[in-house]
Image (cartoon, rainbow, N blue to C red; front, side, top):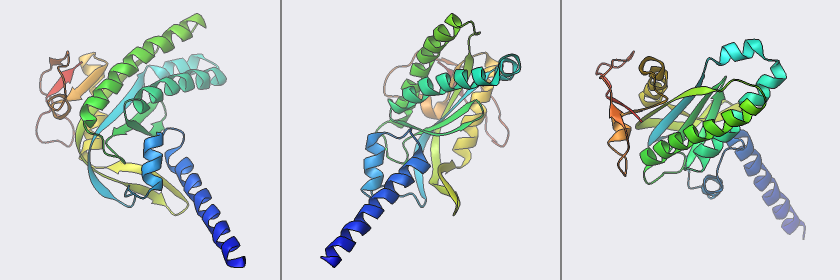
Length: 231
């Protein structure tokens, strides 16, 4: 009985640790499918090379709004925005990695592989556009100005792993693909667009996308020009 009781207590502790690990590492923005894969031990979190699509989204002119609105109202506005965008990402097989100020970083294809992560990311970006319209409708009824954002997508290989210190770990992506996706997002300002995707994403789409090619552009740290498409 003592051995059986000890085994049961140890098992319960392991389950609690797994639950705490998921909550701390992936927060509230992990799907049930991803959770089940991790608990089953089918996902390598110590480091692996994955082909993924990375999404960055950033609010425009948000600093100006912060300066003119009470802090508690700023928190309400940005949380409303983050909630809608996160739902759009999650329902399209994506994972929100982190919120950086008023920016969102998300991945499609890690830690669990997605059959066509490029198409999932495009679908998420289009859904995020619709969600922004709903957010703005809600905000306008409360007397706030509309929000604008830019979304950038790029596909390629990354190193995906738990990264950090023994006291604080987070699931993160490292590599050129991440840097390029971030820079593509910023280029929305230059092209006056709201969704930009790289050729690596556009050519891998499962279906015809209403998009127009833009003038190839050089970005910092990349030797060859990027062919981008505005959706």
